[in-house]
Length: 273
Image (tube, rainbow, N blue to C red):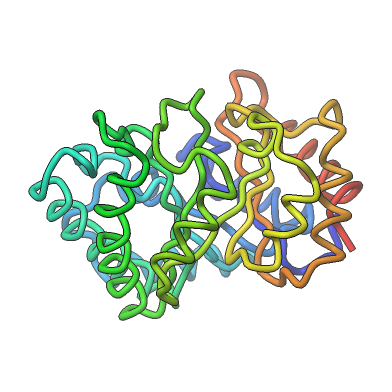
């Protein structure tokens, strides 16, 4: 059983109609946090009320879990690439206000900005993209900060179809340029593994991170076959990182319950106190 109090798990891993059973299982395994993909829970973005949000938070709490982060925050929002023009960026800001309100009503959360499909550079150089992205993310940071939440930037590798901020160091650099408390770094171990980023690089980034995902490449179930988890756990424990460590896995084709059990075994062996 997981002993640490800062481990969470994403609801991507199970069918939504098994929500109560899944929450009961992960709580029994020792997870204390729940990361939500809101579209999966609420079925959309428009019209989600404060009462619905509070009700879900109480539902999670009844199983011993706290909602600690949101992911998939742009899924189902029908947005275009951020470098395609001002209209696309305005639409993103409008949608972000909905997400930030939701995060605020959950009590103030980390909200993961992934969405590799929206990060096509469309022929722009990296420096040209930065000149557009920095003021955009400053605006986004202000929106989330107003609701007591933080937008956390996840590097997405090129193999996921991303063309902007594909390595963790690039995320760290962009966050430094944006320089707003509402916009911080998110670290994902799947990205680190795909990019073959070094442990020393992670050591230098970990203390600056606001959120952390334990994942495998392509979000397959956690496995001891990935020998780097032990290294990642050692680095986190020796760093000043004090946030939630959240497991992210897509729903497996096989038994999702076994997937939850195995994830807890990896966390206990490699990341726990």
